[in-house]
Image (tube, rainbow, N blue to C red; front, side, top):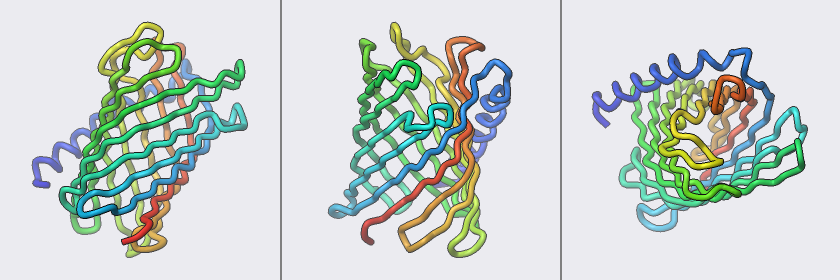
Length: 233
């Protein structure tokens, strides 16, 4: 990855932080405190082909129970050590504490993931395209996600990390997601490399979900404990 690409990623992260986060403290947003514990597994299959599996339980404080559960399997083609192409499927269950309703979502996704080391820093960029099929909604909702992440290595095993991810709905569906900005996630934390290919990140995430107007937005404050496990070298 060359310098122009790095400048674009840095510029993108600054724009996201300045345009999407200030509204999160708005009085009209409903707030919730959550715990997210995603676990990601990575397994070489053959050559440049790798298996990818992610499970994400999310617990809402207001409900005091699991509010969402995501299971995301996929395949990666590791074109270069710092550049990979992914495709996969996602199954998501949303649990409503208001009427005990369970809503399922099926999703197909594709992404490109790249990174660049600059002295003690590691800059990561990810673009993901999703085709979402939501229970009770006709049609396919297309969503684009852009993530920028920066790690700073304190020493061999410890690093601090910050990231921002913007979600944009590319179309509108009757009774479903509307086109435009869907949500933004901003995360700050610390990471520990337990082994060569195993690490854990712990930190705070602000998820701001953009509603259809200024009176039904959602601001979720989450403690995130995410584990990355490489099954073998």
